[in-house]
Length: 229
Figure (spheres, rainbow, N blue to C red):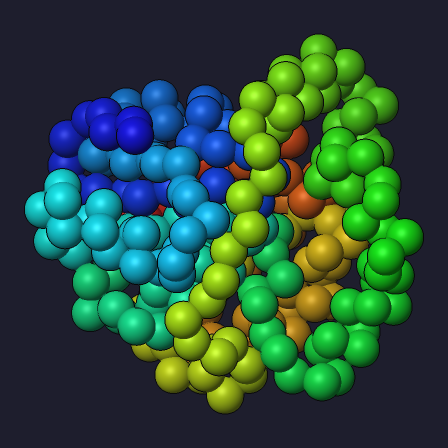
């Protein structure tokens, strides 16, 4: 577990691919901005949102911000459905949200035909073409970190659907990249309408890993949001 800094706590939830060290571009910046930063490696046992609550209880966190990317964002949303009173703000980046509505599942299959899409290399699926073309060293580093630990599956405690999203009153920020095939901008806008208190932003020249591909833009957007909440 990483626990650094002082001030209002921010808990970071990594994607299914990767682990807590993937936040290397965020933790120093958020610590310097005056936040206490917590990141941990999830296990595949039990409900992932329960692991978040266990960490918050162990560290005696009162009210905190929750920042998740990809699968981590689904877990963050699941946590918000069970523990909204614990949260100051919710950030869900580059995520399929976990919605189970039939029309959304049908669209997702068109965007990422299964099982062909899942057979693609992880960096092809999760890093945008602009980043892979322009940043060979960053792509190598991402792969080194991503491959250091096994991919972590997860289960959610609540049914996530459009109706459930409408009950989340926590201030919410949705982020995506303009080249993210999981949450392309039209899908971002569709989900932004489902959350009662939602802001959204699209990061340019960015795929599914905004926190890594465009860390300065990602950090600016999230820090500006946290400062208001």
